[in-house]
Amino acid sequence: MSIHTKLAIIGSGPAGYTAALYTARAKIDPIVFSGKEAGGQLMYTTLMENFPGFPEGIMGPKLMANMKAQAEKFGTKVVFETVTKLDLTDRPFKIWINNSTQEADYFADAIIIATGATAVMLEVENEKRLLGRGVSTCAVCDAAFFVKKKVFVVGGGDSAMEDALALAKYSDQVTILHRKDQFRASKIMQERVLNNSNITVRWNSQVKAISGKDKLESIEIETDGEKKVLEADGLFLAIGRRPQTELFKEHLQLTKQGYLVTAQSPTAEGINLANTYLHKYHSISFPTMTSIEGVFAAGDVVDLRYRQAIVASGSGAAAALDVESWLLEKDS
Image (cartoon, rainbow, N blue to C red; front, side):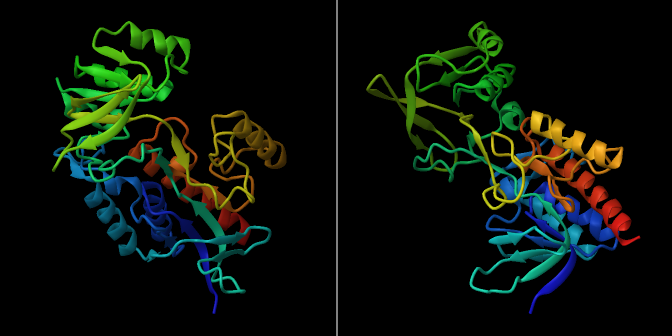
């Protein structure tokens, strides 16, 4: 038997749980579909010192457990299932968590998508085990933990350059490992990196192994066919991010990078969508709405730039407020 809800939230990271908290307090009674990785990427982090309100820092999993508990306190229902299929052609929208059922498992008047994005990994042994213990996908988050430490950045794009520069503020032992003999980053970012005395570059280099018992201790790299083991305190992966939008690509507009487009996306697609809503409603009343009315998006699934938990949380609050206003407008 299908279940009807005013709001379905797909995803359970900072954006999803914040959206749930806000809408639950507004008596919308949201259902959160947590997916395979309840809590999102913060479940793989250790001490967070840049999330406001925790002067001593807080462990990533603890923060997510607190967010979940707070959302549930006000009536959020968390379903530990993965959405496998959607029908967004009509309202209420149809949601399946079991492909074997012909009838939809849930019906929702509105949806907030907060499925996040995952960092592209190297796919070498011990990589995930040591994530948050020397291996990191966010230099902005973790650079301060590596004062005067030996750190390596893997990548050759703008993200890798930004990570290296962030780390160079704390350490004079920053090395970029790039598998090619030239960067693909913008010229200005390359110049900043190559002119920074705290940063060195190893061209034609790839990480082949990661080692450490309780924390990262060393990496094995291969440069021009020669393998070498190097002591390492930190390894930062900056080889790309993959937004979790596979489920939505046949329904909603995406950027060329695969992120969901909303009326506030800082892309050509986002500007066009904003103009569409502006002409239709004479204002951009719901900036977090996607290309389908009633479907909203928040967090890293729309964020090409900032990729911070606090930004994701803020966008979750924005999406929740948009949903509340939109539902009131539709019900009036």
